[in-house]
Image 1 (cartoon, rainbow, N blue to C red):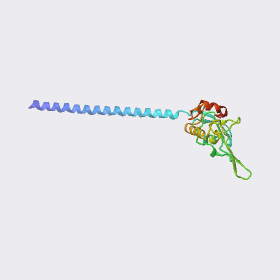
Image 2: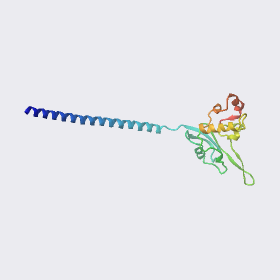
Image 3: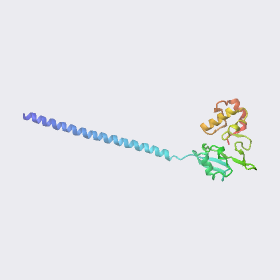
Length: 200
């Protein structure tokens, strides 16, 4: 009988030891997982911080036309036309901002021409000087509207609209040959008007 009691006591002590060890093991495992989670969160935060610290690339843009301080300015790569106009001191009283896309993204080497509203003698609004044709008589494919693009050889209204739509969807053209990415403009058609166009 005494032996049975000793066995029961030993069995109880053994069971208690197992339970204690199990609790200690679980706490250690839980603590280890918590440490791993904290480390992973710190790594994620570090990656985000590094991305946020990366400076924006600087581009140079020529801002001219109806702005108060026309000049070549350095802008951040993610800036928009409206930012360029503000950098140049804002528009003058003769500026026609409705004639340009103020939300268009800027690119290096771009010329932002703010057009003029011409006031005729009777006080009515006359023609809008869009500034889409440069001094050499070439059409600026990055700023020209549908009507001005139609002046190019072989470009009709529908194709001109496709050019404008492509530009709005993909941003400004960086090379003249990029026009061939527009549906309907192949090598032959491009050759017919390439001497009439410019990027700036």
